[in-house]
Length: 114
Length: 112
Image 1 (cartoon, chains in turn brown, cyan):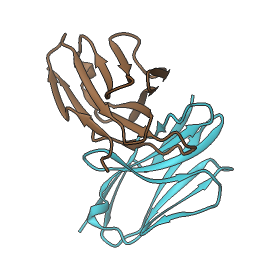
Image 2: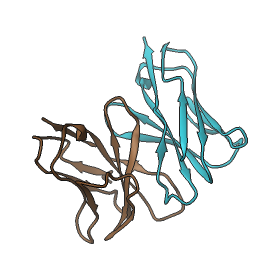
Image 3: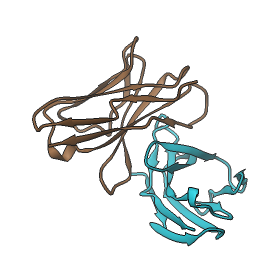
């Protein structure tokens, strides 16, 4: 009865490298959301995906950030050419296809850019 | 743009005290309000409220929504040190696909 899984839990990258963050939703959940929590700030929505579709990417920075949720495998949040300002905790959440808005969160990936 | 404001931003109490956390919101087409508890890890779900005036309760925690005045409160009675956490309030707008818009959170510290 696993919850939302994220890996890695901690990721260190140097400026200019790529970061790939993975999220496996709860069993039976087909809706995935990514949120970012900058130091001393609240959680901010980034992107909403269903299998093979990006539904809402209004919170994603226009450059360097991309997300996918393939038919098989976890959802991936990819950050190219990372900069110091990308250092944050990235949380994934999932929910069922029923009428509830309740999202269940993973433990997060803490990205540090040196 | 949807807006969620929580108060106070931080609160320090002693074990056994009762606390009330506030969340006010501005949403074009409100659908639901959710409360989460965040310790040093994932936010954990507490309550979802959609109807005015109906109290949700779980143990020492309870919450109520006022859709007319656009706010919700989260009450914690007989606080314990394990209640120390950041409490997050989030709203969902009708056409947002269940996207959560969060407030900044209330940092609650319960001292023994």
